[in-house]
Length: 622
Ligand code: F6R
Image 1 (cartoon, protein in one colour):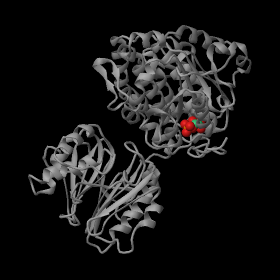
Image 2 (image 1 turned 90 degrees about the horizontal axis):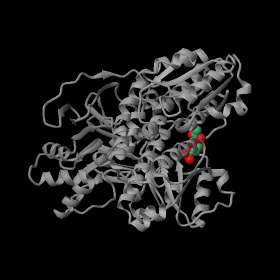
Image 3 (image 1 turned 90 degrees about the vertical axis):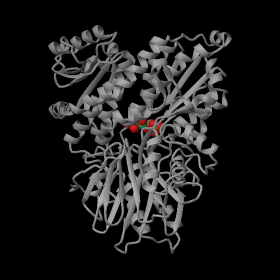
Image 4 (image 1 turned 180 degrees about the vertical axis):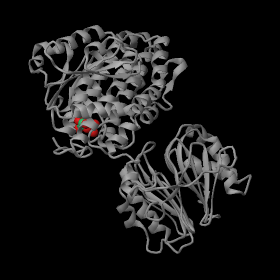
């Protein structure tokens, strides 16, 4: 989730100062490098935070307009070379971009054939070259930009500048937010209103497929096809901090609400639904080795560990490969039996968790192929593993992991599809060595189609969050909570309990529903509620009888059930309904109500949900 900010004005302000100050308020979106371009002074870029960029800005770096960027790497390492703004060959067209250009490889090949030379590994750079290419035919910057934008596929929030039209900035939106700020004698373009608010509170939000042109005196908006758009301006009453939270009270809620978008970003460009295949570019370099593996060990900590447990069910059921899931902190001190047919797969949002990192180093020492499912590009774990899959969830600010968990499970589903269908392309010798089960095209298609439908289904859960809020308030005086589930939802019981305990500080415990009778059931009485995850899956009947066992001990039960279930409401005290999907993807939907429940529960207790006591976002110590 990068941040863009652009300014043009005739009020005597120095664009360099306006842009640097604005970037600071976008830093919450995550950063690994930053940069800006002023037609009157040139460009400056730096790795690290805005403070690092500020140090590099020369004294005479001045102008009336410019574009600026904070990068959170997706394509290419977080180096100065890959930092935005990116330029064309002539150094006249400059671009900053938030999002992913899906067809950048095809476009780049075509542009290189036409003589363009690329300076970076970033997907963004193609935009500048495409505009340059069109400027050869039309001298009109606006027309050339429109033509270029029509050729790119993917997501973008963009700001473009042309040295020969220094007063003009062109902005465009497709899937990544863009807002215009309308001041007197000055206009702005940004990823969210926070950098604009110190200058003006009058803004216009662009919609997907819209292009805006700003100069100090005016702004115009067009559709990509060229039709003009008339949109009323909005007055923002939020503070800059509220605007960073997208108008939500906390980052945690904002990040839960981002779930459908995160799902789309993790899956984007990686599914061939009709062929029932997943395409994982990050694993291309190890495809041959993957065809002969016969064991997977997943390592992670906390939430990432629970995602790994969900992955264990997915991979064993659909790929037929033995999987073990280990806590990083335990694995590193064991003497694991590993050989060159073993994958050790690290799951980590931050990519810096010390225990997971050491586990991966240990696995590599013992000859395993080390893979990663990592959210932070070029983090230590990403660099230490041999290959991997990036989550593309964007930076997570709330300490309690929510959207990263969604993307971790989604990446595991993609990996399941990738490995399950891979055998078809392996040699018979490799196939028999790996003893894997072949996933049929039909099964592959079912998984791919179900994955495509998940964002919409997740949105309906989020739209009904009021009902979950009410329930959380009803139970907010509880001092204990048991979470139970089976099979795919067994890890979800643990993750649901973790969410509640870490932000509300009450005792919450996850338990395999079948395991209750071996101990945990003793705790149950009328003051000890249970959250039972009981979707319409292959263990539904077993879950119903586990709920009966709790009711027989007078324990209150909230059931998380599939829409259309008419049975569970007869025994549970409260029911949260969730749309149906295939069994292996159910955890991805079921965790959403549990994240929301924990959020509203802790908020009701007046706690700081974004920064729970005693915890850090990235645990780089043992
Ligand atoms: C819980 C939580 C932690 C992390 C764990 C691993 O909400 O956030 O349990 O999941 O510290 O962190 P990463 O994924 O960064 O390795």
